[in-house]
Length: 253
View 1 (cartoon, one colour):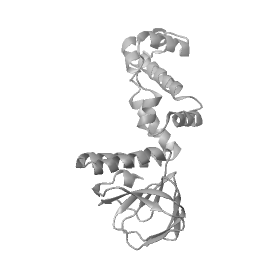
View 2 (cartoon, rainbow, N blue to C red):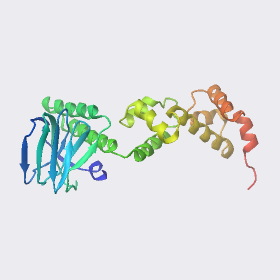
View 3 (cartoon, rainbow, N blue to C red):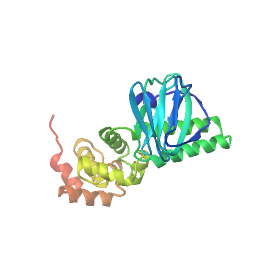
View 4 (cartoon, rainbow, N blue to C red):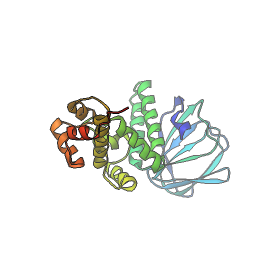
């Protein structure tokens, strides 16, 4: 999905929603634009280059510009579509994007549609569409890559005492419930405990490898107060930060 993430969008056409009945058949020999298509309800099966691709409420499909395909309506439903052009996007087949939160993407589609209806600025329209593309590529990542991205975000913001499940979930385009599920699956712990353990590990490193004061270390590790830092550190290590530094600091070269 790096090609989609790095796509340069030349033109975005006004969004629309297709009503597709069961057994509807449609063929095209040369699609004029790329398209992102979603599914509010129903199901459509596309056939391209001998392969089948299914559009249902848990997926988004990227239809390639110049592509030749056939579709048939498996069941009646509504299918939002955004046509667009791009000079650097390379796509020879239909791409199916699995969605963890399809309603969030439908909401973004509606936002984009309303921007066109209200004649909002070119910049706002393109910004909204790029945000949607970013969300789609992130949602379609395998769990391991998604988890790696979440951990990177936590590492980059570990010094913020306001770092929370809600913030991480929002930045990762997932729910807090799914966030907790990922941490349980990969680390057998909660996001809160993972963050706390990461803060303690960073504090240990700073205590034994730098000359920062305990107060400065507490701030760099995201603790809301020196008292909170000392209390948590002792509960995790059995020592105060000062005792830990004295015991574990290496003085010899």
